[in-house]
Length: 270
Image 1 (spheres, one colour):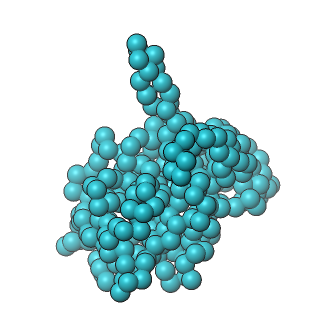
Image 2 (spheres, one colour; image 1 turned 30 degrees about the horizontal axis):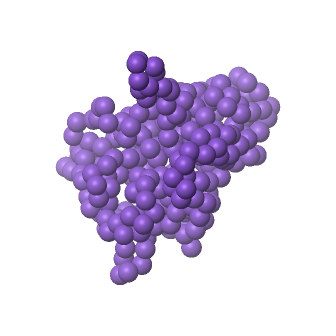
Image 3 (cartoon, helix red, strand yellow; image 1 turned 180 degrees about the vertical axis):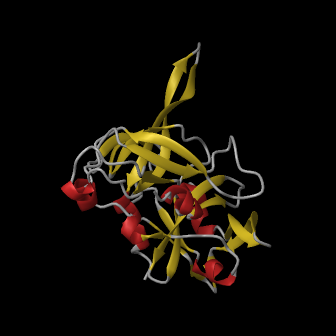
């Protein structure tokens, strides 16, 4: 049996460092001849004004050096002769952004990356075909602050499950950057339960390629699921402990924007 997580998907995942030294995660998607790095808007910067004024980011990538894979921190300019190389989702509520990093993939010949093909991006028809529903197992690839590999820039593999009805909108509280208030928001997304922590914003969420015993199209039963890209991690919902004063604490409940929002962004690149 093939191992798409370790043979393919870990090579598509990239650690991103913004100009303030803050860490997030992104993943590469192949769109025609372009290589698009997808992440959250807030990984570049929470403020739209500061995103627009950012000049560069650092990409923590892997290269092949004398037959061995080693990590490199590579500066990447966000503008090319005055042309902005990134696009963000036009909906301010959708925290998804893409960066055209084709030039770095072309110029660094010993780069060790494998961008995801668009055929692996989930859709309504694929969710139905494989009967993807709440309770199904997922894999999140990212760069939590708490632990990292030595000598290379491979991501951590974090397991979890789908909590909500995937393919339907969910309601959650949102910090509106325009009004400065916490508001209810319905988003195209779903919730997962996972030990995702700080540093994993922008992480891809994949369907775990286990044997399908849950139904769907007859010819999919008894075979491994494809590692479909289901969405992108946005934020963890916190719980608050009353210890004399209310203290935020991880809840394990993670908000994920669904795959359609990723498609929206990569389609912004001509």
